[in-house]
Image 1 (tube, helix red, strand yellow):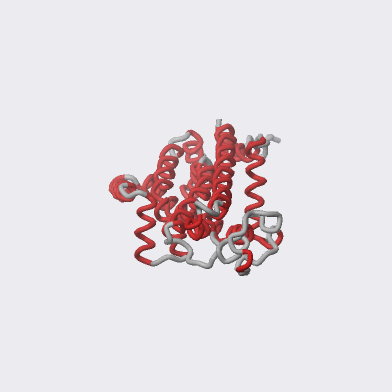
Image 2 (tube, rainbow, N blue to C red; image 1 turned 90 degrees about the vertical axis):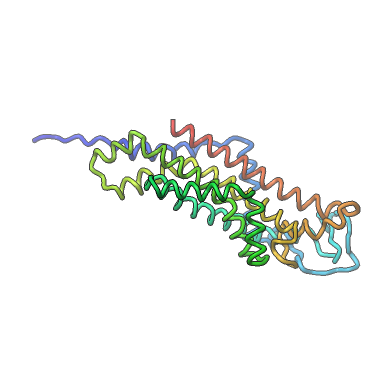
Length: 291
C-alpha cells in the first residue's frame, strides 16, 4: 500500500501568514488610538451613554457659557450643550467618512483591477481619465459636485468619495501589477487553478492586503474633508450636529468664545491622528508579515 504525503499549499500558507501577524500587539500608541476610535464608535452607536443632554435643546439663559462641569464643552449662541452636539454629531461625521471611503475604494477597485488586468488601450484610457481627475485638487472636485447637486449628507458622501477615488485607483492598479508577477501566482496557475480562483483567492487578497491601512487612513481624511466642506457652508445643513457644521457655526465667535471652535476642532484632530496611527501600525504589521 502506497502512502501519499500531501504537503500544504504554499499559496494558501502565504495568504494565511498575515492573519497571524495582525494578532500581535500593536504597541502603546496604536492601542491608545484604538481606544479613542472605540469611544468614537460608541458615541456613534449609542450617544446617550456619553451625553445625556439633548443636542437640540435650547436654553437661552445659558447661551455662550464657558466650559464647566455642567457643560464640558460650554454652550453655543442658543444655549445648546456643545459636548452633547459633538457626541451626537459623531454618527453623521463617521457615517460620512465611512461612506465616502467605501465609494472611493469601490470605484478604485473596479478601475484599478480592470486597468491592470486588461492592459493595452483599456489601461491607457483609464490611466488618462485618472490623470484628468488628478488635475483638479480634491477639495475643488468636491466643491464642484456639491455646487451641482446642492449640500446634503448624501452629496457630501458622494463628493468626498469621488474626489478621493483617483489616488486609491492608482494604488490598486500598482498593487495588482506587482502581485500578478509574484511567484505564488505563477505557482497557482501551474497547479491548474482556474483563472477565477487565482483572481479571487490569491490575487485579490494579496493585492488588497497592503491597502487595509490606506483605507483606515482614508476614513480620517474623509472626515476632515467633509468637515472642511461644512466649515465653508457646503456640508450638512443646520441644525444637524455634524462636526464640521459645529465649526462653521462657531467661527463668528472664535475671538470671544474660543471653545466653540477649539474643542470640536480638537476632537476632529484627535480622531484623525488616531486613525492615522492605527493605520500605520496595521501597515507595518502587514508589511512585516509579507516578508
